[in-house]
Length: 246
Length: 78
Image (cartoon, rainbow over all chains, first blue to last red; front, side, top):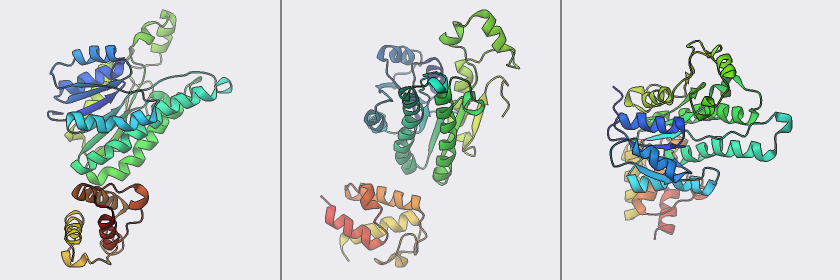
């Protein structure tokens, strides 16, 4: 089940905790990975964990529209095709709405939402020709529930869900599925740094009583990327330990 | 009929799965050949590949009939 042998997957934000776990999960199922991000050293470290030699690194600043538009053609040229696109990269610029600067709003929307749109638009072309494609965008529980201090982030993550549903309808007849995975609280450098009391309070809201791991997200992405998930499109899989049941 | 017209019609027949005799030059992709907007996008991509031409979005939007496609390709083929 879920054999991705022979497939090529672009993962954005591949040097981050969740991104590198997604890349690992897809590679473990046999996919060849195009790792995209802004930090070459961290990307090389992520690539080194994958095993196999065909994986490639593409540095790309997702706040630069022209660079984003060039990314899919670069991947197709170097790796021959693209079967799977994982829009994982995301940034936060938290602030209360009343204090939020235009720039904080713009940056989050541009990187989290607009770059994902540009990549979907570009990837649709080779996927349509191939009559096969898997697009998975990493949303967030916050996109469904909201979170104070994150109007920009919540809007971008909810935006991914709506955008994916629209695109799913446009492309379903061509063998292309478009879905989201919405993580809850995932163990990371950020959550490791939380004070114990705050961590304990957080865990009381999570029925499983634990934070998630990047691998939990990677597993959901690997499923949606598989041929077996061909009848699943326009959906969001919530991977959050039950903290929000949607 | 020109060689370009023949190749255009062949692509239309293959992509839309229609009878060759229905693909007249006056035939509208949407009204006569049952294409939807996504089919048109795909046809344009197929023409670009077959004839090595770039068909920009504003030109693609004006291609409604088989003749429109043939004319554009004949005028812009390198």
